[in-house]
Length: 333
Length: 165
Image (cartoon, rainbow over all chains, first blue to last red; front, side, top):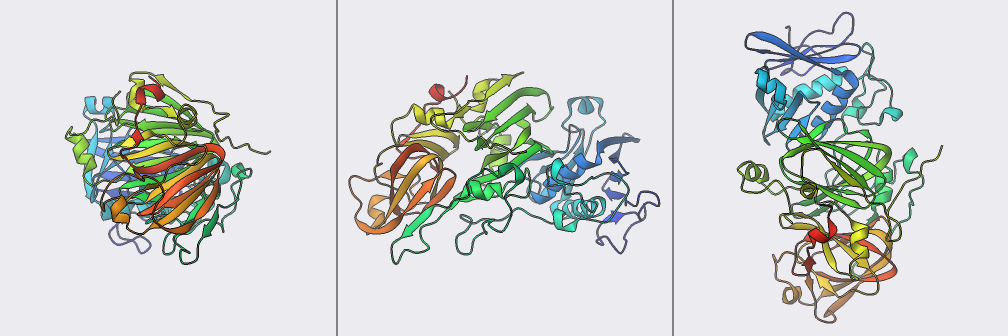
């Protein structure tokens, strides 16, 4: 594979653009990433043989976009039932078949670990090259152009969005902004846009704070992309708006909780290590449910909905679960 | 075409479900916060989600609550109804709650300090309950508030009663 081109960062291994499709092919360790008009194809070597896996280009790009935007997230980001990453917070595993019971059994899986900046740089370069003008991997399918076809332009504005960092609560001085400048999403046009009335006594201006969380969510321009809206020590409220399908199967390295703020999401839940189905959880407005530390989950939302994702960022939690010091279930009753 | 966003309320909520394939429904600790609040006394701090020491509590907001204070920030999200939160800057917050104490503490009687003001809130509104400031809820129209906090002495756990199993 030829490498080091002027239009990709120097530490990325990539080919010249393909003469027919216009896309580059990338290599990371023993993995090769290639795309054509419809599919992303990943290949690797195992036992002296070449193995490969294929995904629709749109699904692949939506999954990779989340992995990049979330900084590899909490635990496992399964692009599908074969390909994915596991975050070790400083290093990241890239795997094919390692958490698929049949691939493991056949011994055709492959896993490599990379320093986070290395895998991040490669994933960003793939997105930069493979996302065409008009396709937004964060958007619901009804709100974006096609991911398919030969290379046509780029969409750097869409793929360079990152999760907003909030220290305490949006709208406070020196904290993340509210979204008053964004339009209300077409599926939330009936969500009231009124604001709470803050009546601070003289001398206490700026010390009392409130905002309309549902208004804030109604103006989100992305799907399946949590943003922090309140911080209570290591407890983070990370609400998000969901439409269509969560592009990844999230494997938990800790317990996570969901509060369904509006509408309905169905969660497909499987075993974290094998992918074997365990349950389907349908959540309606007001429902609260835990996602245990030993599962993977994927959500389906027909109507754009508001979901409160609740995370615990206490340091060392993944290792405590892995060592068995903490049960995978948050409550026993 | 117009979409209808469905929120729940004390008067109208529809609980979801779990279809088990190979699991125990209790692992999902599944409840509905409106159902929980409907079955609770006003301002009973019922835990609906727990992650080690951290909790989310559902409170039915009706009438006026006792005064509370915590040594750390807490957050309130109104899920139904209308309420006002009143705040007082305590003359000596260390007397009410020790620095580093986790969870909210209920004050005995009225707080000693200076009124800071109030916030009037309806469904979807979120307020900061700042560390070391005393606060109380005044229900304008009966509803439900979610509290993001740490488990305290007044937090109530009744999982078998509220969860699918």
